[in-house]
Length: 610
Image (cartoon, rainbow, N blue to C red; front, side, top):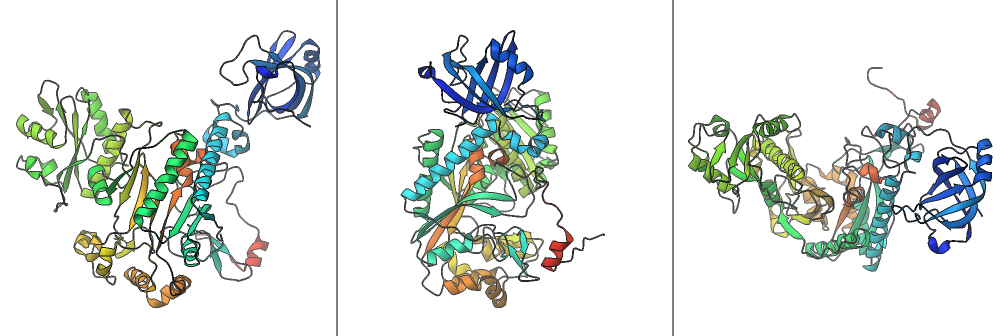
């Protein structure tokens, strides 16, 4: 046998035993007539001591970093113990060794503080995976997987596989397509999700289904996106929204407990989509801290429960506010001592192209009760005090105000809030806060296409009270500015998102399960009967054979792992990820195929411009 123990296993209780270990050489340290070697495997590191006799043998058979070796020897207590590793109390007095395989000099150091950049490490990902930091990420991923499976199994869910080669259907992103050699000119698509299959399983009577499944979307990438990603995909029959929320709160709380040893006992907060948008500026708010948005000037209308307090800023002849569609403020706690340099830096931050604002107005709420503003030429101290109080600011706080077009200003203020939350230490990696966001709009207006589209997907049911409002698609709407007047704008989806620390980790809905309503939904999206039958005839047909009420949810597995692991990028938790261009630099994929394959597929490549 190559080994009797792993390199993370031996303790003082094993002292005196003769053992055999195998692994990779981490470091070699020569001290006169003896040599110390750190031997590594996925379980840990063990120090080896090569005495005088073997040290001479090492001169003819030198060991290098990442050599694979096998050693035998006695476990002995170390004189210079290392409290930083579990095996730090012992070492192996090596009696013999074998070099199983030599290694070329690695392109970067294989240790936590490596000198390898992202591109180099991705090119040699099989070496990067040896690093302790990466190993811990994959161990966490496995722990989340195991906890999810155990919970769902105990709740009566079945793991049922669904196909990867399917028909292209509209689900909001571009499909990856696969040509069929046996059906020339026809193509499979890789699934963006198993959505229609899991609904068909509900029709088939498998009332609790799940998969931890690969999904594929051909869309622009960023830190938390990959062309292929993993979901915890779930569906239940004979349920209402409350059943889904309770079931999957339980799933996430179980993952917290099993993986992070956190007993999440507090009630998960719930808020509507509208409340999230107007209180935090986005539909996945980070509620670990306050700094809620205060809308000083709504864009032409007010929302239920929200007072238009535009009188606080009107009448001052301050064109920045007077000519803006909306004015939004936040109060940064304890920041009134910011210097001119610091407020100028924040102003430059909001002017960046990715934020897109023209400037920033501030009000300092000084500890002595006075108020100082970059706009105090236009506003009296009494008025500044009233504005500050409207935002909830207290003595010592700094009020920051942005003005401009509604959507851009809201997004910019939301980003500013998150940036300040990070700078002020309110967004801690070891603090977790869950939230349900409910009552999303069922439709959103596509200005470019001049039509209404499903905000989630076309299988999402409207709220029961809004079903009667469903009407045929009206192409006469001239632009998005008119959409609030249209009946579609008031239709709410029976949908829900779970948010963790400002990240959407799961989303789902109660589904449409009656053919008539599903046809009505398709028609509202501009599909005629022929198109409905061509794309979704199988689903509409299934609904005629006793489809039960059902609903479900899908969790972004990679994203959940990255949040639990304290990383902003899901790539850190995927064994072989793609880069930001969707390339696998290790395999050099995607790559060209030879002409023979094109001939077999009866496809001719015609690149534009060539």
